[in-house]
Image 1 (cartoon, helix red, strand yellow):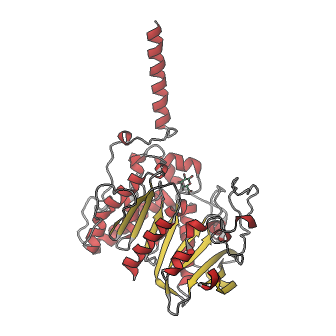
Image 2: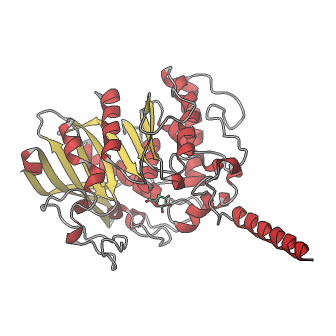
Length: 421
Ligand code: GTR
């Protein structure tokens, strides 16, 4: 009798566990529980025929781009407005005399509406136009270095208990908080510039039905394919590029778009949608970034959509707990960047972002790079930690947690030197 009730208890427990799994409430970190999956072939057209040459790839590329727009990130509008820029500050002896620092207000004006974003620009003291990294920061430009001349953002910021931000307002005390993630001195000493913008200037990171930030410049009622925040942030990077193209100090043919985590997803989508970016770097970008969704490992489509309903388009919800139905996977996002260089970086303790899924995305994007450049990605097995694998696709998994470190930046600078110098 006792045994029978124990058996019933075990059966009930396993039934409810598998239902929790099915609903995405239990996170899978077990490689043996990764479901069998088939990745869509980036070199097969929607009608089943094969891509045979570079010219046909351009057609296939538009097919893939459309699916990502309609089913994942949403469709961003064409820019038909005006960009007005004004210098807010300038210091020709920044970083103890090692660099030039500027803050530039970039106003996006469309009809009677305006949205401002403030770019913090560090440039090496060099005579010619310089290659540059462009990326969003999470906390406001004042968190990027501890230099006192950078204004504290007035935009809405996420609350942060550690930084004692409880009213969505940035604080002077956070100055330089994220300096270790930016490594500005290292970037400048290698001859690169850095342009960074607070991402909340472009679209505040909360769910308001796709209305605030740059969404407001257009203001139509959202539908299933309306642009989510990732698409809005990526679109903002293209507007930053519009500005960078006009300033002689920057070599706009050598702008590397870079981002971490949700902003790493953003950098990939910006690189996919805007060919002006010469190279793309995604740091710990995970689900909706470089990691394959169909592995259902770590963060899943269902959990990301439930936690961040504003990041993707409405249609992406169709794939909550149904990753098998996705008509694309994230290796095709990397493929959209080809033949331009793309770097994917993982961290060993960041299993939520599925390092192996990020690596396998590089492997599965390789045939497109092979077709376009003659050379694919040179690995099929995960490399050891701190041992980058580099071709036009770069990959590393470093020791440590979800973060951007000096080690990461050193690899990005090496990668940029290899391909852009
Ligand atoms: C997490 C989210 C991830 C990642 C990260 C971040 O909460 O689940 O997809 O983007 O935030 O951006 O810091």
